[in-house]
Length: 171
Image (cartoon, rainbow, N blue to C red):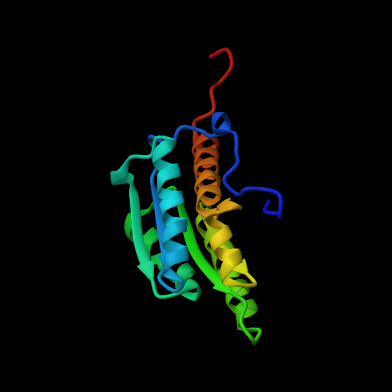
C-alpha cells in the first residue's frame, strides 16, 4: 500500500465500520521507541476516532519486534480481543538480521491469525534507514499505525458480521 507518493494515513473514513462494540489489543515494541510510540499514537487515535472505547483497548509493550508474536499471543490469551495490532520497527543494518526478524514476525502473526480465526495485524515498519521510518510514523508518508488500526477494525467487523446468525427467509 505504501509508495513514495502515497500516505499510509489516507483512507475513506466513511467505509470504516463502527468500532464501538469491538475490543482490540495493541502490542508495541520498545526497540526504536520514538518510532513505535508514534505508530502507537496513530493507531490508538484512529481506533478512538472510529468508536472504540478506551476500556476496550488493551496495550502491552515487548522488548523488540521479534517478541511481537509472543506478546500478541499472551495478550490474546488474557484479554481475548477481536483483533490484535502489532507495532514495531526494523531498520536494515549492515547484516541480513532484519530479514530474519521481519520474516519471523510475519509468519508468527499469520500463524496466530489462522489458529485463532482472528486478525493479528502486521504494523511493523521494515525500512532501510531511520529517516524512512520517521516518514512512515507520522511523517511525509503518514502513519502505518493508522493503516493497521483501520485494517484491524475492518477485520474484526468482518468476523463479527460473518459470525452473526443467518436470518431465515419466510419463517
